[in-house]
Image (cartoon, rainbow, N blue to C red; front, side, top):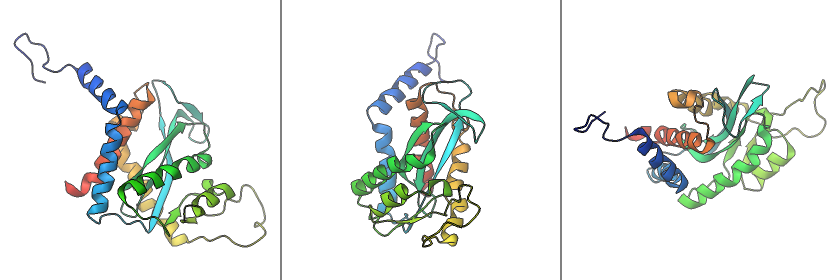
Length: 225
């Protein structure tokens, strides 16, 4: 770090932190992310025929706000639900919640954000397939996707049933579902490469989510490296 004549750092770390908080509060970081999606769309680098969505949980060792204990992961932290296209580009701002929240209702909060950014940058999602894990299998989620002129691709969740569910079989394409491990799971693996995000160190959730948004922006801009 550069130092002045008195031997003190030219830029103190608290000044950098204040700048980050100001950019986060002003919506600059969200605008940067939206700009990366717009750039990818203008350059024809988005593949929107299939949209993959999933949630990921981050452990918080130092405590903080917006946290909850996840019995499935056996850790205390927070979770996000994000969407990506078939080329591992994050295309929608994520929805965050404590680690003890069920992911299924979060989808109905994430879909309006997906449509909002699509309208803002001119993306056409009509007819796109939304591929999700079985945890999102419920009538409300399927209806929310259909109402936005998209097609849900969700495996039926048996929920402890010993016999198949009666009635007509719902639409499900296993080949599209298998792409999840090459798309959304790969995005979350890239996210874990950012050591600042592997564990949550920030006690304030807006700061942690700002770093997460910057990471997703850098993942989108990898095409121009």
